Length: 338
Image (tube, rainbow, N blue to C red):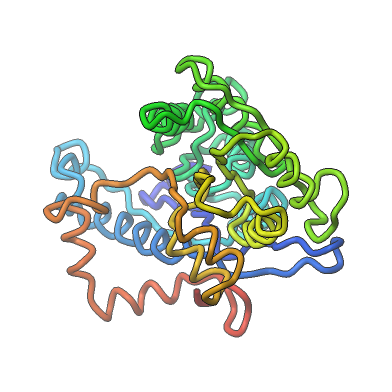
């Protein structure tokens, strides 16, 4: 482990090329492409090439003597984290074995739970780990993850921003509808509610989503309606799960303009439409047409003069060719393209 005698340093980057969508049982699980991985992979490749060239366009510190006099050169492998704990652990361990343990860094993983698994493996192999997207506050704060760090905004900040905004428009009674894997979200939103004088209640939904029993989306929506709450925050584990929520909301009649809906843990509402291929009049199309979302924006998303954005625009066909060689998904397999 660590940097080789020749200055070589291999980085394993785990990105969410695919995800499972649960059917009625595990036999009916299907794997789908996600929308995050390709832009993340391109950014990782840019970072590696800028470091090796000591190009300081984006990171000014690369022109410092500490880096210009350093002989370390990075290499990069990209793995599919599968948006799950199992995929993350399996693919990372297999890659470490393939590399005979010769890696000096682990990066990536979007899912909070999977990121913790990667952090534990990093500590076990004495390799630093950094996540660019997971927001769990446990990483970098717990001795168990002693070599780990994150560069994303802490989950508490997003919860606080949402609650303060809703309170500012008079929405002080909020129903949080969450999937079973999102226990962290309950903690941060309810805490933000207490600190801002907002009443937060919770309803869980879990697979099998097509059922009508306890814990189903339909059961959750019935309970939301019975509560009388008119502000609903959704925290699904996966974007396609919103299809079931939208259908259930329509079935019980709470997809009207009486209700204010927010998607808490979804990247972009436009991507919801693209991911699930809705048609005008579909329950989900009706639901997200008036839905708000809470997301963390990087500087390049709203600053035209952002250094990263300018460097991104300068990428050419040769860069795209190099990028394609990193794609860990085989042709014709889910996730090869999005």
